[in-house]
Length: 233
Image 1 (spheres, helix red, strand yellow):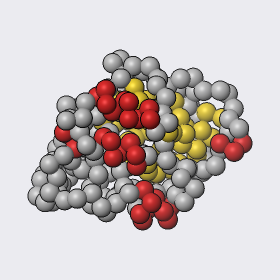
Image 2 (cartoon, helix red, strand yellow):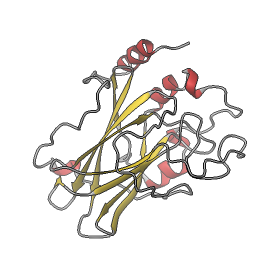
Image 3 (cartoon, helix red, strand yellow):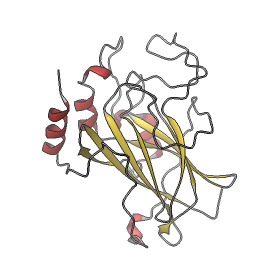
């Protein structure tokens, strides 16, 4: 069985670099006051999908005991007009567990017979700090048929939704993680990669929602800038 040390070594071999430990929750590093103009292309909008709900959980730790490879999401909200961090923005994230199951809905799992109604795992909200940063401690999402591996997010200012998007992960990292025990035992074979995902291809051809990943401790860190047009809903 693949162990955590092997995960970190394999990730390093595909060009990733180490960052501080996942043992303690950590905030994203402070950002520079202004980014290069080329860094401020708007994050593409994507479908919300059928499994969004707002359990009103302002929290940085999302897993609620679900098994999987630890993952820290370091997200930064950037206002496109000035290419500067946007503080006070509400960021919601939600994603599937290691077996491709979402909380809060009927018809989950490979057989579509599992109900998770009333459960809230792998969902949460944070508000961006002065650097535009939010951090979530979670697990790497599993796949489900017809979709590449992804995390959903929404960014709000007050009642306005600035963007609904999806965050994608390197396929090489996904493949390594999916060899670990928590992600095995599936009834169906994984059928979709980033290059064949209809939403990634049509909605994000520039791959602006594709994160950078680094190994950390027994898991990984994923970094993504979410660039929004703050003056519009």
